[in-house]
Amino acid sequence: MYKILLSIFAIIFSSVNAGHKCLWIHGKVICHKDSTKNINVEIRAYDRDGISIAQIIDPDDLMAITFTNEDGTFTLDGCGDDHDWIPGIMNDPEPYLQILHYCNNENGDVVRMPLKRIFAPDSYDLGTIDLDIKEVNAANLTKN
Image 1 (spheres, rainbow, N blue to C red):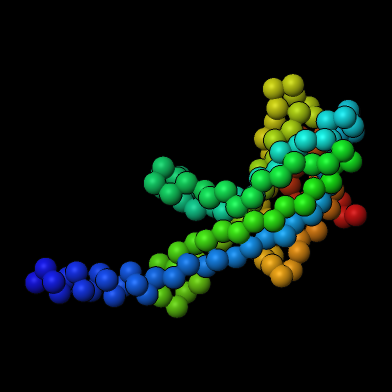
Image 2 (image 1 turned 135 degrees about the vertical axis):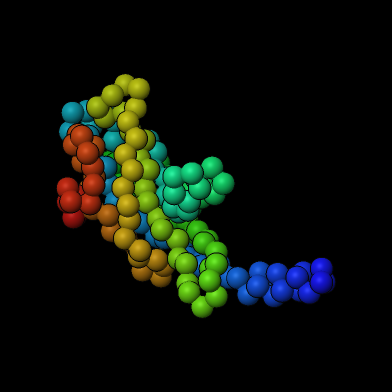
């Protein structure tokens, strides 16, 4: 009986694949209050995994990290994997950005924004992110 159960689990888990996808993102951040704070803004791309209590077991995966240039521009590329727990149903990464900046607060602010599921070979032009706005989201981005 033990060998039969072990064989069944081996078959199930060997058929579980992973959705491997990569991001190519470029954009710009701007701090109108103090343009010197446009440089070295930390930008990270994560793959959202578990929700609520599941975050303890399966935390979000870091896909990429970069820092802005002197003019606030950045490029970011990285990959993420999500396991396809149900055979035949693709489970692609669910990317989001985390931006750490010091535009409005000397202790730093963290902005999280979801990303569209645009994966390589396509690139994602994020436009300009205004860090002076209290709540940055896709609705208040400007395209270059």
